[in-house]
Length: 220
Image (cartoon, rainbow, N blue to C red; front, side, top):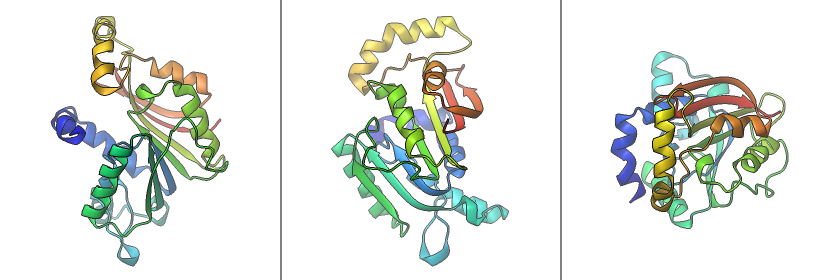
């Protein structure tokens, strides 16, 4: 029931637009870690060549004449530790009728050893760093498998506010209850985690009173 429970919240808070924006930046061979139920599946541009069916990103990019060969996702690999969420994501692919090359597997984002160094053009994580025991290790793994020459690492994460301490107090007080319900530590310092990982940040924007970070980066 995960999708059902958060759909309205994401719509009201504009999170779906943030997902749309992030997915439009992905290209080539893409890895998404902590992919959950596949909430980004409909936003990637799979292109229309060869009968592939694109999502909203593909349709809008084509309408505006912005779609280029570089912006197309040629292969998408999703991985998540939850077998139930992986099953839901696979069901979505079947329902969407995607003819694109999409692979969905059970796996831990903190151990991507099954993937070689420099394997992916783009590595994506959306709202996943809050749920890992060692989020810095996850970012190090993401950097390892991302191509050093032209590779992109795209993140949407939530955590402590940079602007409002009263809001951080609310997050701190409600952390244990939130972890029990969602498995998410929503009061982590995302900027520090990113800095500690050595990720090179090209751009960073803040939303929702500074609690949500949209980050475009590349491997150190």
